[in-house]
View 1 (tube, helix red, strand yellow):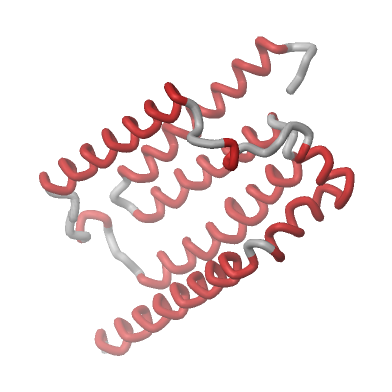
View 2 (cartoon, rainbow, N blue to C red):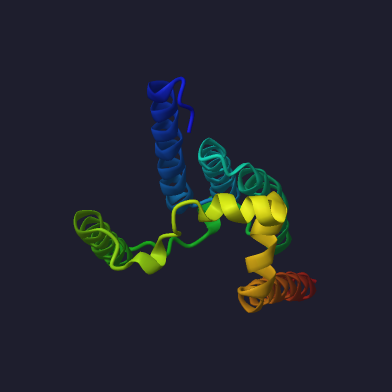
Length: 184
């Protein structure tokens, strides 16, 4: 946190938070998959700014490089490969029941946030002890502090995510290839 300009820091922190929320809502409400992907990029950049303002510079840079860069290129590649056509040709799956269900889920999530905000976190197991992050960065360096738990404690989740992305891309290629064969 910047001690010299606390009001300016706070203003920009909330500004990037609002940009992230608004662009995430725009991402969810777009009918065009390409437009939705571009709004997701804006969300990723806003989150990166939040991380950098929290002095998590490595995570902020990785947010831009990995998510806004590499993952979004893969998403756009799959969208283009599927050749979804003109947005008006795509059936709108958001009917009345879908909107009602989304509203109920949104209200439930807001209620959960309210409960957590009013009563605090359920236990201290969700909060790192004071100075823990600084100790980890001093001990392992900025990259090591992220890489050590990622590749030791969460290696299975990390590998399952990569396999899931590989399966999604393979499925998109299979669906895209089958559509081209059927069109001939």
